[in-house]
Length: 438
Image (cartoon, rainbow, N blue to C red; front, side):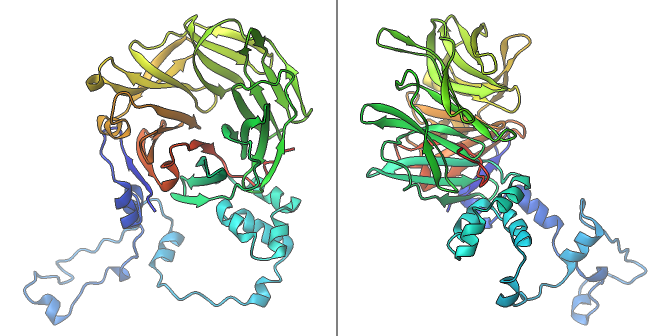
């Protein structure tokens, strides 16, 4: 299984195969060097064989300096210096009698994908994972971290694989519970995943939790026609919303509609002013939805709290061939796209919107070797999506993805068979058992 290879902005990096061979990344290698077992008390080798042909190492000539790895306290150093003993045999009768609250607290700290496999251990554990007390402990534990979810259909059978960035491992999640009409991956937020599709001639939308396998179909929209959707989850409020943007169907202008899980209904909002959209890709951040427009040039912004659209005259960079809007943390909004008229002069760049000056500011460029590996031909298309200042690039002809961390300014390859399907769809995903579809 291939993992992740990282590099800095300068382009130096480690391939995924090297990482898996060595079993660690560069950062982990430097860390392992620091926490290697401490040799006993700084003592020297005084055997006759060791002294032969060596310089004088008598106590009067030798200065012994005792150090410890930086960033580790005394207890940690002592722990790493201890000898490794065989695992203690666990007694089944003791572990079987664990109190319910203690078992819930232990399971809440196990990585979500491992917990998913534990459901088949016994009926008790399967029921615990659906218990409110376990979900309460799970909601208080820090998030597992960002994951990459890929979805495709193989012979009309839904397939799903999830790549855990913290664990650098692919996991296969069964998606047999989805109906056949669920074909388009809308996106993910707060542990929930949204799909849409056509059931005959009827446009439908569903929301599911891949870990609990729970799902439900949303009510039909007031103007039930196929259009672009985006889902937003509010964890504090334990609710979610689905936004259906304005669109044109035949000679009719469809208004913006918003589904609220608390009310379990769609409400009709303002019709977006007549604009020429240059992309159907959307980005949502800070309770605002953004779309790119060519006429008038700039962005259209939809305020979820007020339900109104407004135009932002943020001009795009010159010679921009194709651009994707990507949402970052808080108010950060990124623009990702290729620059250049000729294939030999093209480059991939990332800009951030300066809300005060209403202009795009360049913050990073993709190193040339990554750009050439991602797009072998200038005419090749790529997909781009992001979450929490992470941006992922995928190409139709590549079996791997490229990840960029905006904060750390690090580029990483993500390899795996799940990205090799020509019809696969991908998005970021946060695994959570406590994400409710109600």
